Amino acid sequence: MLKRYLPHPLLTLVLTAVWMLLINSFSMGALVFGLLLGIVIPVITSAFWPGRPKITNYRGVVEYILVVLWDILVANVIVAGLILFRRADRLDSRFVVVPLDITSSEGITALAGTITMTPGTVSCDLSADARSLLVHCLHAPDPQGVVDDIKSRYERRLKEIFE
Amino acid sequence: MSFILEIIISALIVIGGFFALVGSFGLVKLPDLMTRLHGPTKATTLGVGSILVASMLYFWLLQDSFTIHELLITLFLLLTAPITANVIAKAYMLDHADPDKDLPKTGGVEGWATFDAIGQEDDVDAPTTGTEPARKPVPEL
Image 1 (tube, rainbow over the protein chains, first blue to last red):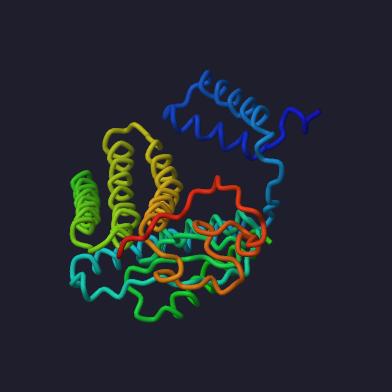
Image 2 (tube, rainbow over the protein chains, first blue to last red):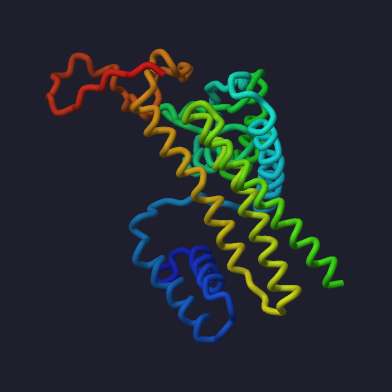
């Protein structure tokens, strides 16, 4: 019964919270409408998400978010420095291949998004068997170092969260 | 007190404007599309982010009206920027990059997903249906 009308309690909470943030001021009517959306949308879209990852490691999630936010801050300063102070023909930009250990598709998606947001790297493509990720670096004199960094800093943490 | 707050908020706005400007300047200065992608995906995030923090502080501390819209904007930016960058990169590679020449090997049996469907190489014996479009000739990078 509960499973049928509340197939995804977390999604219900998130949708209600997003609705309240959009309204941007608290009122009872808005909360009721937000809850209504939060209940109706998961029910009618449940066919689109047949399986979802079980996340129990919430401490890992918080740690990961903080690490990524800090790295975004650092990435911005580094990239701004590269853009301003380095001649374009002295940039050592190249593709690197990151072999993946992580297998869950949610984990790979999160990893690819993180790589794009952090120091001088944009994730471009995934191999057809999802075993390696193609990453473009703005300035990478040491490609192996970039790969090691990504694997130890992000992939290890994501593995702990999703697997 | 409110004087110090105003200085902090102004500083955040100036920092935000600076990073947004640098990101846009990167678009002009960097030589090709793949490097240009780095400007807007990063420098701009901090630019918009710090302007949003300034806006939140201003309305919260100086105008006494609490607003949290800005958190939502930040969240949506963080969610959409990587996807946009990925789709632009894929479109560019499909049109301008030769997977045999310009890209490194995957290190596995399969090629990159943009160019090779899984198991495509094994299908040489299968009859060609003629419906698959031939790959376009690749211009020099």
